[in-house]
Image (cartoon, rainbow, N blue to C red; front, side, top):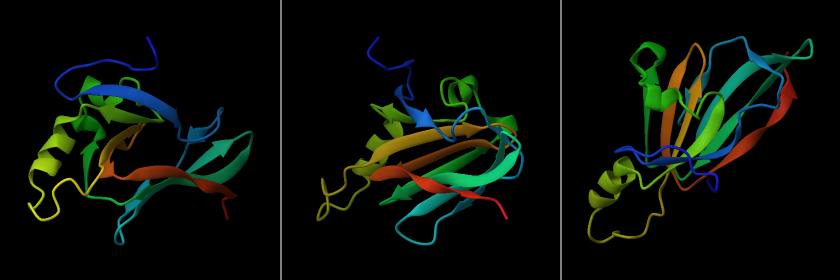
Length: 139
């Protein structure tokens, strides 16, 4: 099945990787900050008796949206549970690209990222790229 999972009007999901190395358990609230062109999704979790802080850095952010856990549909959770996925053939990205001014049309190469974090909800980010933040011991 070449790594592509599920398809519907939202698009197909392609797993990129887990939010943290297993085995881990998220123990504190997730924070999402968007200070400018980038955004960070950070969380604190326990693994093998020690606490760590890690997360994701989204670059070239064009839009984002959040669904609280109680407002997530099965589509938000399936295949994206504590796992970063890319939504391919995304209607949301198509909508964003269609709204681009004609003078910048085609300039942005936007990707649709999705991750569902237990007890928090689903985070969707339309961005150029994403990378893992370095893991640090929690203080």
